[in-house]
Length: 70
Image 1 (cartoon, rainbow, N blue to C red):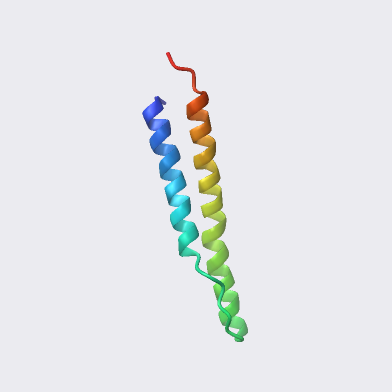
Image 2: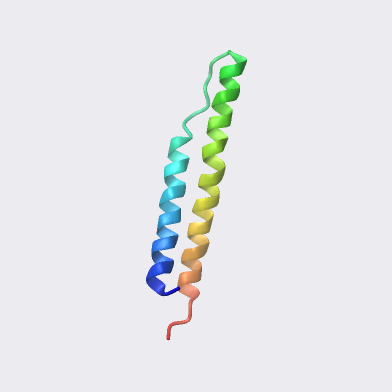
């Protein structure tokens, strides 16, 4: 991969992770058990991939800077 592809991939993953983290929303404060479980499932189903994508974006941007230039 060339340097532009690394840059696009790293920024794209970082932005996708940020979008997923913004979609998770706060946990519901309803006393109903079923609704509370659904809110926690929604929260963590968006948060965990968002964190992974943001971490991969940071790692790939570091790899881009450490890439030897020809």
